[in-house]
Length: 170
Image (cartoon, rainbow, N blue to C red):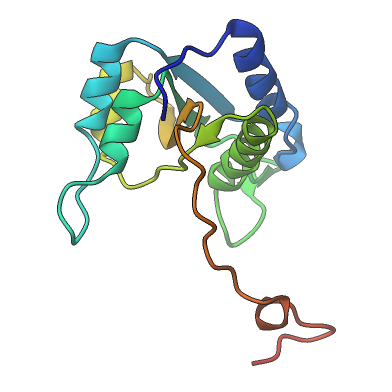
């Protein structure tokens, strides 16, 4: 990503799109921490967990991007009906935050910004770095910036491989 700054109006549009995502009973359990400070971004980059091939390349994306958005969730708020978890899925905060992040990523793309959806990090470390209070957790992160190259198209499965009509069919 280029290090070109993202103006407040553009950033506001991206965050506004996330705000309008649907959520369980409109609980809106998400919270977003916007990080522009390079020292904090470097600390967060140090939380990335290495894969089989060694260092996680997303650490560099975090450091290079002008903005890092960290998505958090309020626990025990989503997925409840009459004070009890309503489904066998338990707390729905992951679903709700994912919907908000999808809106955020799509709006960013429409504005010419690039993102990298990140989940392979030490969430406890990030929690400490950005001061997430008890009752909340860090769910996902995305560096946000203007791409310095055209991203390659990644292969996608054919619809016939993922869509079934009337019943699930292998």
